[in-house]
Image 1 (tube, rainbow, N blue to C red):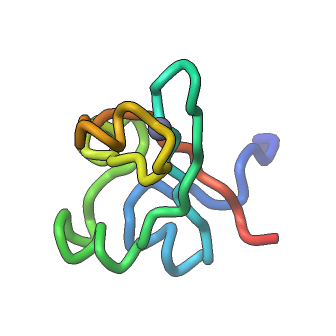
Image 2 (cartoon, rainbow, N blue to C red):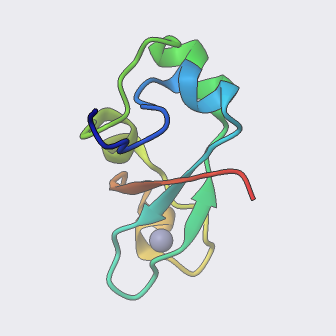
Length: 88
Ligand SMILES: [Zn+2]
Protein backbone atom coordinates (compact mmCIF):
# COMPACT_ATOMS: atom_id res chain seq x y z
CA UNK A 1 0.00 0.00 0.00
CA UNK A 2 1.32 3.37 -0.98
CA UNK A 3 1.80 6.05 1.60
CA UNK A 4 -0.59 8.95 1.36
CA UNK A 5 0.94 12.21 0.29
CA UNK A 6 -1.37 15.14 -0.38
CA UNK A 7 -5.06 14.61 0.40
CA UNK A 8 -6.18 16.70 -2.55
CA UNK A 9 -4.46 18.29 -5.49
CA UNK A 10 -5.52 21.84 -6.10
CA UNK A 11 -4.32 23.36 -9.29
CA UNK A 12 -7.04 25.36 -11.02
CA UNK A 13 -8.82 28.58 -10.09
CA UNK A 14 -12.13 26.73 -9.80
CA UNK A 15 -10.65 24.14 -7.43
CA UNK A 16 -9.01 26.78 -5.27
CA UNK A 17 -12.25 28.73 -5.04
CA UNK A 18 -14.22 25.60 -4.13
CA UNK A 19 -11.69 24.81 -1.40
CA UNK A 20 -11.87 28.35 -0.01
CA UNK A 21 -8.29 29.28 -0.85
CA UNK A 22 -7.09 32.83 -1.26
CA UNK A 23 -4.58 34.07 -3.82
CA UNK A 24 -2.43 36.92 -2.57
CA UNK A 25 -0.44 39.06 -4.99
CA UNK A 26 2.81 40.60 -3.79
CA UNK A 27 4.39 43.72 -5.23
CA UNK A 28 7.92 43.13 -6.51
CA UNK A 29 9.17 46.64 -5.82
CA UNK A 30 12.07 46.18 -3.35
CA UNK A 31 10.85 48.90 -0.96
CA UNK A 32 7.19 47.98 -1.15
CA UNK A 33 6.37 44.29 -0.96
CA UNK A 34 2.71 45.02 -0.30
CA UNK A 35 0.45 41.99 -0.50
CA UNK A 36 -3.15 42.13 -1.63
CA UNK A 37 -5.76 39.41 -1.77
CA UNK A 38 -6.84 38.94 -5.37
CA UNK A 39 -10.49 38.54 -6.24
CA UNK A 40 -10.88 34.92 -7.32
CA UNK A 41 -14.17 35.64 -9.06
CA UNK A 42 -12.51 38.29 -11.24
CA UNK A 43 -9.64 35.97 -12.08
CA UNK A 44 -12.10 33.22 -13.00
CA UNK A 45 -14.03 35.67 -15.19
CA UNK A 46 -10.83 36.59 -16.98
CA UNK A 47 -8.97 33.30 -17.17
CA UNK A 48 -11.66 30.67 -16.62
CA UNK A 49 -12.17 28.16 -13.79
CA UNK A 50 -9.87 25.63 -15.48
CA UNK A 51 -6.89 27.96 -15.48
CA UNK A 52 -3.97 26.19 -13.78
CA UNK A 53 -2.46 28.40 -11.10
CA UNK A 54 0.59 26.29 -10.25
CA UNK A 55 3.65 27.86 -11.91
CA UNK A 56 1.46 30.35 -13.72
CA UNK A 57 2.83 33.73 -14.82
CA UNK A 58 -0.14 35.71 -16.15
CA UNK A 59 -1.71 36.57 -12.80
CA UNK A 60 1.68 37.47 -11.33
CA UNK A 61 2.70 39.52 -14.35
CA UNK A 62 -0.55 41.47 -14.29
CA UNK A 63 -0.48 42.20 -10.58
CA UNK A 64 -0.90 45.92 -10.03
CA UNK A 65 0.17 47.31 -6.67
CA UNK A 66 -2.30 49.70 -5.05
CA UNK A 67 -0.10 51.17 -2.34
CA UNK A 68 -0.07 54.99 -2.77
CA UNK A 69 3.57 55.16 -1.61
CA UNK A 70 4.76 52.62 -4.14
CA UNK A 71 6.60 53.73 -7.29
CA UNK A 72 5.14 50.84 -9.24
CA UNK A 73 1.62 51.85 -8.25
CA UNK A 74 2.29 55.50 -9.12
CA UNK A 75 3.60 54.53 -12.56
CA UNK A 76 0.97 51.86 -13.13
CA UNK A 77 3.78 49.36 -13.54
CA UNK A 78 2.59 45.77 -13.26
CA UNK A 79 4.46 42.78 -11.94
CA UNK A 80 4.72 40.72 -8.83
CA UNK A 81 4.35 37.26 -7.48
CA UNK A 82 1.47 35.28 -6.03
CA UNK A 83 1.08 32.92 -3.11
CA UNK A 84 -1.75 30.54 -2.28
CA UNK A 85 -3.29 30.50 1.17
CA UNK A 86 -5.49 27.71 2.49
CA UNK A 87 -8.63 28.61 4.42
CA UNK A 88 -7.99 29.25 8.09
ZN1 LIG B 1 4.11 48.23 -4.47
